[in-house]
Length: 315
Image (cartoon, rainbow, N blue to C red; front, side, top):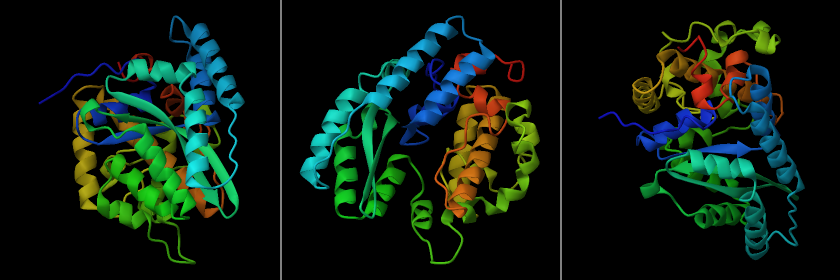
C-alpha cells in the first residue's frame, strides 16, 4: 500500500528520512542540529533562491542560529541529577528556536529536540538532536535524555549508541558490528564503506558545488550492497543482507512517492557522506562534511523538498 505524507516543507534530506519513518520502513530518524545544518540551510537558500520567501527564511535561520549559539548550558557536576537538570533547561531554550518550531510544523508525525551529551575522559561535550517518529511509536523526550545521561555518567556511551541505533531502525547485526573495534584495526566506519570507496572520485571533491554528485560518486547503481546505505551516518556491516533488503524496501517506498533521480541521489549522497565521515575518523578528525562538498546536489538537499525536487534534474 502506498502512503502519502506531506513532507514538502522539510529540508530534502530530512523529508526523505522522515517519509521512510512515516511509511513504517524505519522506526525513527534524527538530525544533528549544529553549524553545519544552519550553514547548509542558509547557503542553499541564498545560492538557489528558488523559494519566493527565501530572504525571510534566511533571516529566520540567522535568528535560529544566533539563539542556538546563545543558549547557556551550565553543569555543576557529572551526575545524573545535575545533567538531567541541565538538560531540562537547555531543552526549554532549544524549543524556542524558530527553526525547531518550523520543523515540528512541517513533519506530520512526532518531532522533538533533546540535548545530547558525550564524555571523553574528563571532558563533557554537548549538542542537540532532533528526532522524527510516527505518532504511535515515539519514545518520550525525557526517556531519550535519561538514557543518554545514564550512559554518560556510567562511562558506557556505547550503550546509548546501541539504543540510538534501535531508535533509528537499524538492523541489530549492524549495530553490533559498529560497536566492534579491535585495537590497531580499521574503524567500523571505514570497514563499512571500504567496498564502495573506489566509487568516490576524490579529485571531484575539491570542486565543491561546481561539480555534480554524478562527478563525485560514480558507478554505484549496479554495485551489490549499495542499497544498504538507506540512511545518513548509518554504517552497515559489509555484505549484510538484512541491511540490503531493508534499504531496497526504503528505496522502493521513496521511489513510489518522489522522482526516482532524487531518490538515486539520496543514496549516492549517503554513500559519499559516509565515505567522508569514515575518512575523517581514520584521520582522527571529527568534522562533518561541509554542505556542498559532494557537489551541488549535496547543497540542494538543504532546500525544502518542494523546492529541491523542482530542479530540472528531477522534473
